[in-house]
Amino acid sequence: MTEQLTRTPGPRIRPLVHPVHSARRPVRHPHPVGEAARTVRSPRAACDGGERPARPRSPAPSRTGHSDLATRFARRLVEVLCGVRPVHQLQRHTTLPGFHQLAALTRSGPLRPRGRSWQPRLGHVHDSAPTPGAVEACVRVELGPRHHMLAFRLEQHTRTGQWQCAAVEAR
Image 1 (cartoon, helix red, strand yellow):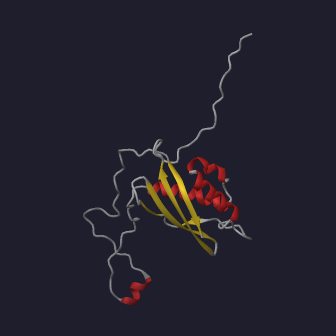
Image 2 (spheres, helix red, strand yellow):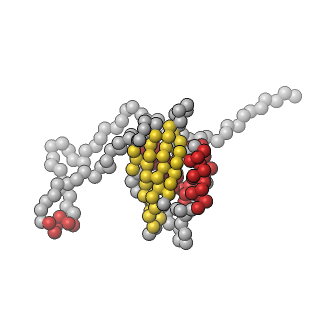
């Protein structure tokens, strides 16, 4: 009469921050070392008549080192504010005051598409670190013809080390 109970595994929770591997891939250069760099001419350069040196097209390096974290969180935050993702999916990634701000923003719906359904497009995420355990970021969100600004603050939990959203603002 004794039966063994087997535990069914619960849902798998993915961490917000992925571990950084120490071995990095080498940087590929746009041209071999011996060749000269190609100059890219813009339509304005034809009017000026002079050659301008080509500017590198790589993004500027992050000053905080947390640009990937800020970009991933901004993407999830925009999905919540647009109504694609439920607000409770970010509950474990926010502090209590931050969750109340996020829930109030979701109810007021500043990023909800009205009328025609537009796909949100995120611009470059600008991040800064005012203190070692905090990251403040802002991003421009395009919803069709309208543009919105989204700012948030991520703080690192002292005991667990997990990054949590402490404040959110959208306009």
